[in-house]
Length: 274
Image 1 (cartoon, rainbow, N blue to C red):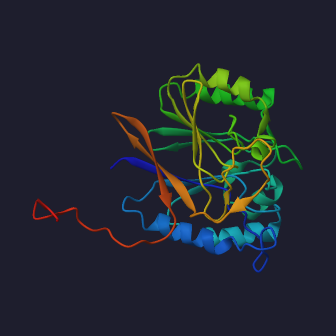
Image 2: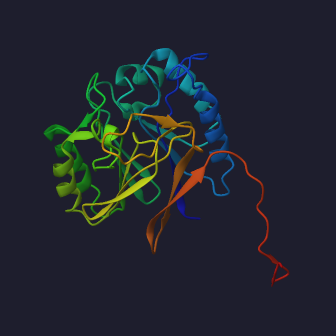
């Protein structure tokens, strides 16, 4: 079976009973996503969570997040977004030693043949992201260490323009060009996977593809007017499933959260059903 891993992002979990934006309980949506992951026909090797795990980075929110993620029967790996607090996240998940004790949350994980390299794009108490020289130098060392392996880079803020104006204003405002130049040097980078946008977006980036994933609960409203209002919408939630194929490389699928009618056969005894 191919190596599979799931990308889950932008959960925005609040304390039990508290609503995101004063009107949305995000926890049931995450629980539904976890149930959907557990019911996938091919069991993933891991789940990678690309930031905005909580809404305000509070310890009680992380405790609620742990409870929601508890039914997962595969390892999961955490990455902070601009709504998170790395100190509180480390305190709530002490067994996740890859998070380190301090500093940027950057690490590497081997997922079957694929090397996952994570980047911390957060800026303290700010919504936008940045990659400083120190973080980029760490990435270059990690890429040099993985030259003989397929690589996926995971980060929160996407390093490309999405054309959703209010989100681009709080995108990766420092280090995007430097990152693209670095990525272009390595032909073994299969994907750059990102969160933050609450939508599925794919862009050519360096010598690879950079993408974002939908969120389990609310999505950013699709409005490409540069002056569009900052709004969210309850479009169907989802996540990404990334599968490694030895001949083709990484093949990515978008999966909606929930259970749906079917599946039904296209054929009956080899004959197309009329």
